[in-house]
Amino acid sequence: MKKTRVAILFLLLTLFAACLPAAAELPAQITLPCEGEDRVHTFIEYVNFGKKHRGRYQCTHCGYKLIPYSPYEDHSGGTETPTCTTGKTCALCGAKYGILDHAWGEWSSAGNGTHIRNCKNCYKVDTASCTGGTATCTTKAVCEACGGEYGEKDPNNHALVHPDAKAPTCTEPGWDAYDLCVRCGYTTRKELPAQHDFVYHQAKSPTCKEIGFASVACWRCGYFKNLVLPALNHDLKQHAAKAPTCTEKGWDAYETCSRCDYTTYAELPAQHDLRHHAAKAPTCTGIGWDAYDTCSRCDYTTTYVELPALNHALEQHAAKAPTCTEIGWDAYETCSRCDYTTRKELPALNHALEQHAAKAPTCTEIGWDAYETCSRCDYTTYAELPILGHDYQAVTVDPTCEADGYTIFTCSRCKDSYTADPTDQLGHQFGAWSPNGTGSQSADCLRQGCAHTGSTDCRKFTFRTAEGETLTFCPVCGQAENAAQLEKIEAATAWANSGSLSAEDVTARTNGEYLSVAFETAGSLTQPTGRVRLALPAGLLEGKTLVRIAPDGTQTEMPFETERGTIILTLDFANSELPVMLFRLVPQTAAL
Image (cartoon, rainbow, N blue to C red; front, side, top):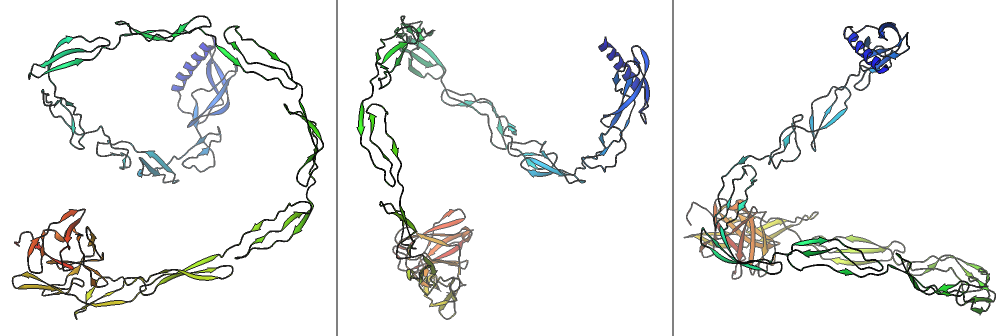
């Protein structure tokens, strides 16, 4: 009855609230139905309902308390300043209201599939996962909020074309219709193997243990083949296990064949589940028994035989006087079979100590800490401190271009010293050689701190370059007669392929028409004796052919390899009397 009354009251309150406008303030009394009649309800307190508050009223007839949907009013009062996350406190119901909420700026990508934005009022940072956009098989999705790429490429979003199927034949494979992505090469193509369309002729059927025979022929191409049909294997049936008991046999689970006499049946004999009990020897004060067995399932047991106690087998021991470090004892008895004893211990006497001063060790003599000795025995706490040895500190003098290097070792304690580890002078490391205009050449030393400038005479070579024309040049400094200066190619490298290469300082020079290759150390040419591999920048021969010029004018095209932005030549000095080779760079459209 009460539930029905409450339901009717709630319905009437809802209809009543729909007809009332929002009140500016809550009245002290309102009239509401109660037990079929309109009754006066008195205001008790304010109750928070989100952005409004309502009043709690009590019926003056039955005392029932309720919160009607209307009347209600907005929150008011409070002295706080609203922020993005906090508001004022309503003076009537105590609710927080007037929270400003965040004024968010634009989203920007933060990487790793997220983006961030800042509140313009409080600078709070909001983080969210990127969403929207569609990933393809070759591109990531683009976030609709921040415009950044995120996530992974979608291996299933392909731009597909659909090639037609091709049927297989007896000797050529085919395929069904399939999909192919024009962006990434993805394909669903599955090859259908070439195969014959056989007709079978069976000669002998197989059994569980024996093979059979048949012949096959392809009706399309006439292919014929004899086949061996494998044995059928057994048609197995399962049989449950039966555990043996102390007096009845059993078996494990086993299989039999419905076609033949095959079986895996294995009988398990009847036997006791024995638990062994180890023998226990009698002691001086306790009984013992021989080993015996019992069955865990039944009352079976072997014969248990008790062995009586032995009593002590006594031995006599002489007395021992105590020393500084060892205890002593009076004469006593022990049992040879057990730990029975009448021994009583006499405590050690401790040492009668004498003190000795310490002595510190040196670089060449031992020392010791302060120690004690005993006047009654050879006890001592003496501990020898080993010779310290010299604590040599090394100071290294580095070699220079013209002076040797060495290391001076000095002891930090006694100042003993010696010199060791000599190193040879480095010699000058010259940069590129330049002509002096007087038949000589010079180069500065590249080592830091060295201001030496080397000078040597040019060694010039003359090659016949055409009928009645020659080229005379120095391969070290690049000075040429009747031709432009040959400039050094800094990126040139070389290594010996066979024979010997006395210096790895390759000097390759070019003026755009000629290329010279030689090897020098400190301005002097060295003579290779075998095959040398030379690497040059690939741009050197762009649109040109390389032709070797012999001293007598003979010209032959020079082959080369291209590898990772370089061209590689193989130069053969095995039968050469000259330490230099000259080449011509010929445009590919020009004749030799």
